[in-house]
Picture 1 (cartoon, helix red, strand yellow):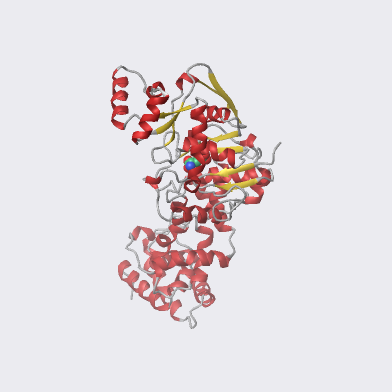
Picture 2 (tube, helix red, strand yellow):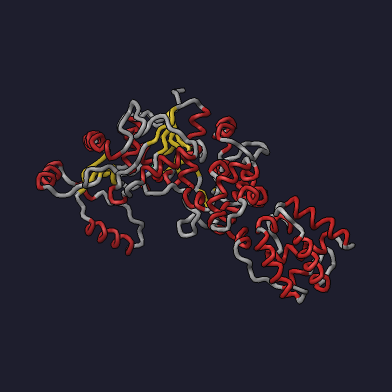
Length: 485
Ligand code: GLU
């Protein structure tokens, strides 16, 4: 077998879709596993859809994800250039060769003419495909039209009989009757190739052995293979990948904010967690393992593990992965990543972030949840008095005023406001009063946080709030529950 050469060929749209990122990932894994060469090619032939800075988004995202390429626009390589618009001149000679051999032809039909014939076909209940109108032009007519400067495109001349087939490494045997194949445009009026032509020419000129791409290209592949054959080129092997879906019916979508890599990073997902989960959306390692680093994925990857059914991207499962990855961060790394999110809710409080980070790390699933979880430390939320009823301890409201008053007295004896000192004042003091810890610490935590679930207990919260704020909140609570102040 030839040494493996693959390419990831994104169009620079400004964002990297999760489906594309997964294609890049599988392409990378397959290539590294087979000790091949991974190429990045930028497919920017659709000049109307170009977005400034979009190529950089691709570079940055792939690098962040660890998917380094061996040849590409920025690193160069033996079959440069790697940007299709810079290869513009390489396509016309092959289009001409196809015209010469009768596998393609000039078409001069205008948009209006095409629209009228399409409508007429639809009115007759036929599905429209190009009707080979311009295939009927004589050599002289074509030469005359070109001379007159009429706008033209080049179309593929697909056969009207027989079948085209191939074996896809994921989807198996695919065959299509030739008379269903459309005479697609290969070269556009601006001289740029369409994807349909450029992918064939470039994959050949770049020596691509395995074409790995989304399944939306599966049905066009028989047409591409006809082009390879017409040009006398070897057909690469194909690995088409099923769509990445939100659920059985819906694709990931821009509107739902779950389409792009950047959407997930903004929400505070970790790249390694995202890559780990993404690898499993449509691929199965064949055993029970779930956690993989990129190099472990390379080791484990095989085409046999790829599935052809649509792959469901389950954000809940991703969130679970993310929480696991967050738990595995070193405390310092967690603090570094969490700090901007703490700041969003707590700026100006002078809060002990390293201590808060210790309390928050086991509870964080996604970083974007942090501001809502810690906001109570800056602003005391309104709360319902029913929170004071501790079902577990079966203690009702009646013990609350006394418990809070005791807590207040005990806290007044604390000299240095540290967790140890708060602990040393509260715990023995509660015991001395003949009460259970929960009878006092539960209402104290409610009084200081106004919520049922908090990172840390009453002692940690009192420490984080500081003496003044603790006292202020405790006084307010005493007032509300009717205790002495
Ligand atoms: N430019 C195409 C896309 O972004 C690439 C398809 C392919 O990999 O051939 O969908």
